[in-house]
Image 1 (cartoon, helix red, strand yellow):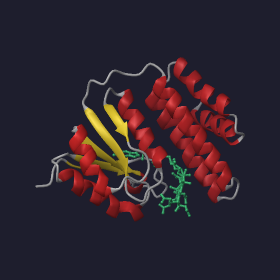
Image 2 (cartoon, rainbow, N blue to C red):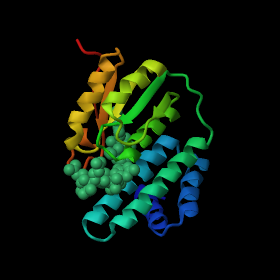
Image 3 (cartoon, protein in one colour):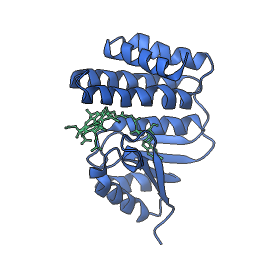
Image 4 (tube, rainbow, N blue to C red):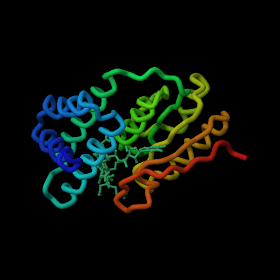
Length: 196
Ligand code: B12
């Protein structure tokens, strides 16, 4: 089974609304030895991008994309509950930049951290900068990871980073908006451990 076949199969089941089939397929890959990170990077994330491209070409509508996204997120939750890794490598809070509703990207990144033994807490879409400081002070993670899908929200990234730095919490930022390729096929990472 090559990667493109897996992506197409997942999309086909997702846009047909066969949630159980699609999620079952992701779990089947896991049961057959594919790691959670590989399933995210080789199946779920490319499927989301491919859905976006098909939507751009008019082959899928917004409703199809919403459905596929919801199935992808269900698959993420299902994978998370399979053999959870003990958290042995510290803790990271993952937040989406204010204004950014592309939560699945941040969720995927958080699950990837989990699968590597990091206690990752995902705060969901568009986290207001005014609230993040209070949360970080209460939970004292080792770092804040900010996910950003569109450059429009870079200001939000800096607002979250400023809030985190003011409490001496290191920040890592990444996501589609930071990718060099225009279609954002891979995240690049921008880090600054601390304001100097
Ligand atoms: C699904 C989707 C939506 C859903 C999001 C649902 C959800 N709950 O996430 C909804 C419907 C909300 C949405 C809305 C919009 N969207 Co949209 N969306 C998409 C779509 C099809 C898939 C996004 C996705 O899930 N990608 C898969 C993820 C997994 O990929 P990724 O972002 O690269 O994330 C990976 C890495 O980057 C990394 N990563 C993520 N975060 C972090 C953080 C760190 C620190 C690190 C190290 C790594 C990392 O891990 C992830 C897994 O590998 C994309 C198409 C695409 N190419 O992505 C368009 C896309 C991103 N959307 C787009 C647009 C234009 C919009 C809207 C403006 C549309 C509109 N007119 O309303 C709004 C904006 C809403 C807002 N305020 O945010 C454009 C953006 C173009 C641009 N200018 O950059 C895209 C590219 C579609 C397109 N080709 O036009 N969208």
